[in-house]
Amino acid sequence: MFGTDGVRGIANRDLTPEMAFKLGRAGAYILAGGNSNRMVIGKDTRISGDMLEAALVAGICSAGVDAVTLGVMPTPAIAYLTRELKAAAGVVISASHNPVDDNGIKFFSSSGYKLSDEIEANIEALVINECVGVPYPEGGGIGRLQRMHDAADRYVEFASSVFKMDLSGLKIVVDCANGAAYQVAPRIFSELGAEVVTINAQPDGININDRCGSTHPEALMKAVISTKADLGLAHDGDADRVLAVDAGGRLVDGDQIMVICARHLMKKGLLAKKTVVVTVMSNLGLHLALQDSGIQVIETKVGDRYVLEELLRTGARFGGEQSGHIISLDHNTTGDGILTALQLLSVMKESGLPLEQLAAQMERFPQLLVNVPVVDKSQVMCSPVLAEAIKELEIKLGGKGRILVRPSGTESLVRVMAEGRNMDQLQEIVGKLVDVIEKNK
Image 1 (cartoon, rainbow, N blue to C red):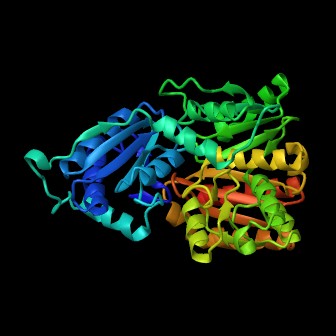
Image 2 (image 1 turned 60 degrees about the vertical axis):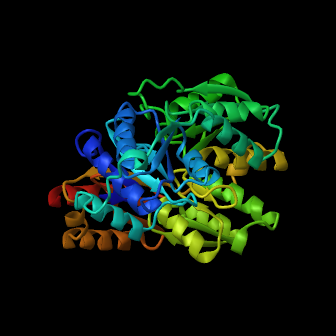
Image 3 (image 1 turned 90 degrees about the horizontal axis):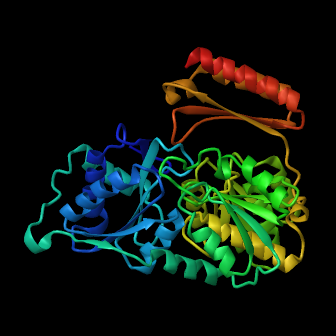
């Protein structure tokens, strides 16, 4: 049930109210110990969020635990408020950057971190076993529903206090992806003094991530140029990631943002362990730029949970993904798109340099990525024909690039990526691998 980012699926088909109810009961029992404690719940703007929230609340309360609903809030805000309110756990109802048909449920521990595989397995086992053994308290033992009306104010105050700076003189276009950041993100940047132009901040329950946000930054690129802004910022549906656009309308991805911030921290002697943790998807240019500054780079599997695990294991404090999902443990316990944007803005203010000049610190090698829909990801990845094809094509690259074929952690896709200096060669390589997958899926 649990993937790399909680339980995901088509809402009302795979992820049903019945399942949400069981997840609420099991999560309350495992994380709150069956005691009358509190769990906080937040969601993005998907139409299915209300339905799943109601079922989750019923499950939590039926296990004797109070449920505190926060309304529409970014995922990192829920992690922060879980800690701030000293709740037993936090729950996020979101499918992040996925289309509106999807939704998801993921948990945070009382410390604001995502759950370990072991705890998720315990919750999953209870759900599969129909929550046998989870009590049904009666009378005064039943949990209560509480609605928190100042959740946004609390997160805005927190985020604004992390980077105390004056953004006056900066014009920023913010693409909220019609998602969870649509209220708090523009407000935070405005309160810090920036002139803010907001786009895609009219959620209707259906238009989340629809040709907008970090997965579709084209509208933001045009808006930055047309409004003559200094930069643009693109969030995803639950605002745990951010990508940027410079004044010339050029995309600045998560790798470039990490290079900018990490090198700045290194110069100030503030980069813990002189180390950055990234995934195997990070561009070769990132490795070269960071190594040139004496920064160690550690690679993990794709998924922010693996980045976080490595940060905690090594004592490093900064890392993330090319997608803009960046974790700074100095500021929050999970990826936080708004805080990442503020960290980037702080580098611009302190250095006095425009974003395009800062982004030029890293040469971005061409990468070609194709997502191939499949029925059985495991079967495809075990194919000896695919393994042989990858081996032969890597020989053709001659050590001047790389090939990465991996299953998606949240969707029925196999992702095929090739990286190198020659785009024609990359297209040929990816095309051949896609053909192999199509014939063996």
